[in-house]
Amino acid sequence: MGMIKKKRCRNCRRLFIPDHRNRDRQKYCKRAICRQASKSASQEKWLNKPENNNYFRGTLNVQRVQEWRRQNPGYWKPKQSNKAIALQEPLTPQPSENNKDNSDFTNNALQDFLKVQPPVMIGLISNFIGSALQEDIAQTLLRMQQSGQDILYCQPQKRGGKDDCKVPNFTGAGA
Picture 1 (cartoon, rainbow, N blue to C red):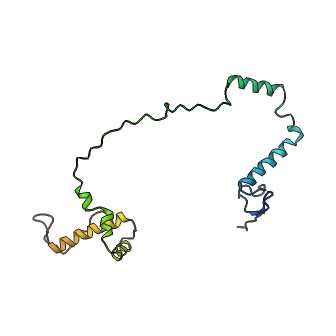
Picture 2: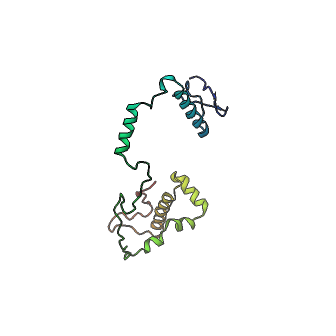
Picture 3: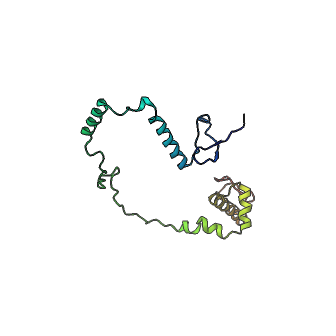
């Protein structure tokens, strides 16, 4: 792999790295002023060639342009935007139904649950699970809280099942 050779812009005289696909022909840098100067120089070079002197002149070109203008009347006028005609159908408002009990959401809101925990605990859990996302930390905290309550209050989840409350249940979703 060779060294990248910088070139000097013909317009602003600054050094620049040419595009790798066009490095042999690129003479101007990517600044807007220099691109405009490149376009002007290119057009001037094209117009100065003798074979291009009458490129857009002659009876054939005049007839072609006149025919196109007849087929496209008013092409130069600004378009009238009709806001009544849209690409989408108009939305009809629908009443929202909030008849459900949302008390569970207020008791376990992610932000509220995270604010009451000391920052050290949050950092410890974040390092433990390998994620700094609040949602992941909150899910882990909820699982840990449930596990702690199971251990402290020793209430088995199933009747007639295993009564060992010392083994925490970390089978839930998350880390």
